[in-house]
Length: 280
Image (cartoon, rainbow, N blue to C red):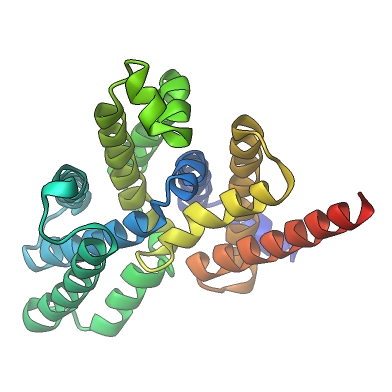
């Protein structure tokens, strides 16, 4: 087993996958806590399906780098969802559900009608579940993922206090002079960026798990926003690394393996929390 792992780690594409996967997991965990606390979990799921539709469109157009098309399209959708707000005729979960299902259906329809690929089922499976796409990144995609991940972490750290205020009490933050709409917009854009990056790791259907599970696991044990965020980041990075290594050794789908590890960790933390409550 160790010999097999060493053999794989000697390849640059595997090391690139581990580096990119770790950074994506870190970014996902930072905003995962905010999404859960603000009840925005379904936005991540909806935007991931929008990203799938955009990726399908990029494939139909035969674009050499689909991320340059998918990223602006997903960000624009996130902004429109947020800007629609209370003035929209279709609001909240209904709007997200319509966009989510619609983008998924249209994306699959376009792939069936226009794709010239000889392995359509394999392409769709890879996009939806991230089976091997993290191992096939080009050098440009690797550097783009690294740059965007670092930018997301830096922005989160710079605006940590404002994000904290908007997350816990948006009305109070607005009354205190914080431009809540601007920071909600910033959060939405960062979510869109992270979702596009995470598609290469776990696929569009499993992105919500990558964002939510580490945050929910951390919340079982910790109570402060900072404690939950730090624990969530550590768990997310650890689970992603363990999942990718298991996937390499066992030849299992990358995305599904990472989510399975996340589920196992959540169950362990839930047991620890329950035992702690019984002990007190």
